[in-house]
Amino acid sequence: MTETANSVDDTSIDLPERLDFAACETLAASFETRRGTALRLRAGNVGFLGALAAEILVRARMEWQADGTAFDLVDPSPDFLRGLTLLGIPRHALIQEDTA
Image (cartoon, rainbow, N blue to C red; front, side, top):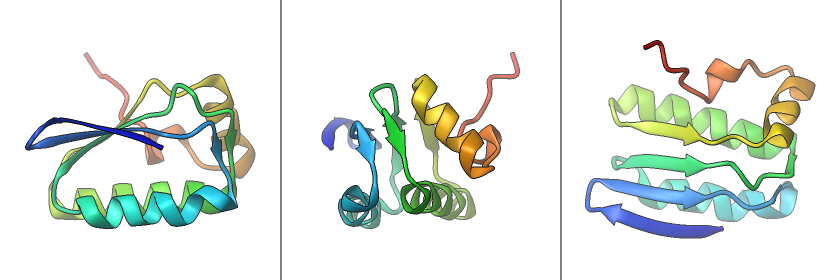
């Protein structure tokens, strides 16, 4: 997972190509250390989305929402979106659609 800080208030994370069981511990720890700060996840390189990783992502988004902190998942790859569909997770559970 590649991480880049854009500013004090905005942390960006490039999600790995495989969001499988092996990536889950790192993903969860990354979220734990960033709780309370705005978070931007880039999912453009994701080629596989596993169930546990999806659960971690959904839980994190819910926690960020409860805290009133920005949580954005941007540029989802077709494979990421396909993974959501296969797991029965609606897009809006992770991706805020522009209404403009």
